[in-house]
Amino acid sequence: MNNKLFYQIRIYFSSEFTNIYKNKIRMESKDKLVKILKKHNADLLSQYDGFMGYILESEKENNINTPLYKWTKDSLKNTSKVDKYHNSYTIYVNSEEVYPKEVADSLENHLTEIVDGKFIIRISKHDTNPANNPQPSSKYYK
Image (cartoon, rainbow, N blue to C red; front, side):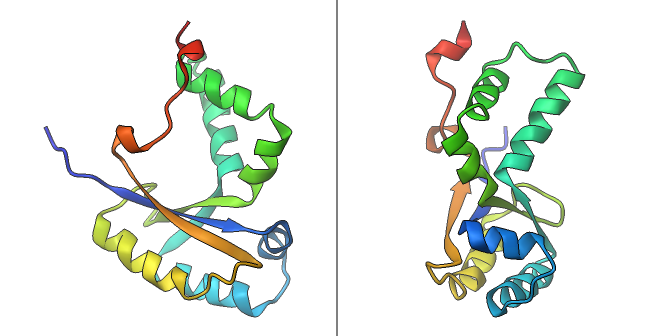
């Protein structure tokens, strides 16, 4: 069994910057971000869009009795979480959601340079170890 961990970088925007990023508005922070993403062959997907994609796919496949589906569906009913999910982005590298540590570290290093706390709030790195990631609570296993 392969126990090698893979990683994912997430980036968190202010609501104002989310609007700037999604629209054809020019701004130095956006230009720097786009340049870094291009250098790493990376794209962004908001956590909201990712969660909605998962929900729609699960419903299409009638795979709606899993704890993860129930938990995700409930999370999207919470308006304060939805606001957060619209401003939180997963970074895909080469169309992959997770990637080797070296790739994540390089991306993280470049992105750290543009975090300003106002528009680009912060970045975070996550690994694929389930012990390091939130899991559905026991109520979703019923």
